[in-house]
Image 1 (spheres, one colour):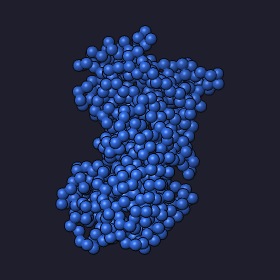
Image 2 (image 1 turned 180 degrees about the vertical axis):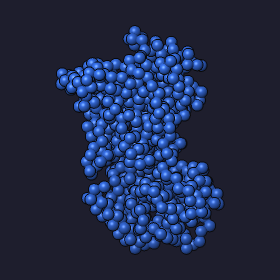
Image 3 (image 1 turned 90 degrees about the vertical axis):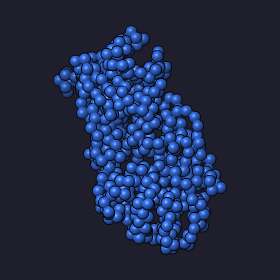
Image 4 (image 1 turned 90 degrees about the horizontal axis):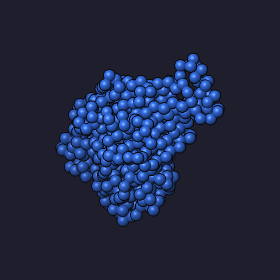
Length: 580
């Protein structure tokens, strides 16, 4: 962190503290006028883990039985944010027994005693908003059996945070964090006695924020599918809470919800999980379906592209491709160099994946997860299609990203076709990467073709220089296909094919045209809900580009009963005559 950033952060903390102190001087709240029903999804298993003293936040496990949660030393800022945001309250409420309620009540009252006057890391607009949503939604769970003094302390703390938000929500980063702050303000405004004007303020601000952060196609600047789901969830909750209390969300608010819903459906794999791109995970089980159902927005997945992703789907197979440049501006701090990477899911089982975000495992894993080799994409000379910048203010911002990403989707002779290209390796090697994917009409075969092309004279000159640097051995490339950890992979036919066995019993076979060497190597699968990266494997096609046009063809096809039966299918798919 630079010196200027440090001063900025200190100033923001001071202003938050001053606002929190001043917020305690307002008229006290003595009652709820309504209480929104809990809408967030908690998990029984996590609730029981918390009761047993196992605290799993932001990829860290702290085992501290019989320990007050606020006595735990946070391993990092993300861990502290999850604690002070009270998202874990959903899990204790899901457990719902006397032990879980006792923990929730004790931890709540201790937070109020220690931090309720404005101290601690929880006094930021987004965390205050997140906390208000949980406290108000679970108020009956929290206050059952409590004394009048504890109930009064609870109401005072709610009122202080609501006033704090009314003064500080504009300080939240535009986008998801600001929406968290404003949604918390909506919950407080409709639920707490005398706070109705806050709901009106938040209603108007939400409309402006929707117009600013949700584009005409229902996407957000960072292109993170899981972040889009969080935005959609907050907008849906706030709209429903307003409606249930005699108010109507602004037209811009509802229009944003209606635009996002089909976009999310297009980003959902056959197993119900989201595509894992640009820092996002698949989402908590059931979260996407619950959010779509709560919104009441009907309709199918958007055809063509959604938020810069292309979707191919037939029968029980889905393929989602990153078909746009990485985000620019502030959103580039979290963007991944994943242009033309894809994921494939068969039924309820992911097969081809990206490694995912390593942010919860530290800066080195975060950096590795953003690089092109961590995606199911083509990699030239071991590098990325975009470079991590060295600006001290934004050390993780992508630079030299692909700008020209032409894409076309059409019908194939038997199914659907994606064709796309990018210029991410043009500057370094004079090469365009072009990828074509054909998904069969029955969803049982995906045929791919990757090309490296030097088209213009100046591109050819640049490629010649890169080739000379290799002493004419050729510019090396790898095409990577990362496998989900639940896939069992083995080399077959003397190393000419890879058999992939899913837990469902399905068998898929990967083959290539022999231009590139085929290998099965270790890989990792990064999930923020896990304590450490999961070991898995990846298929790699390796070769060297020695001319202005290099073409590699490969296929993934589902076997009928055994891998033997797939040979005719894949050989026909790779036959140049069959292509026409």
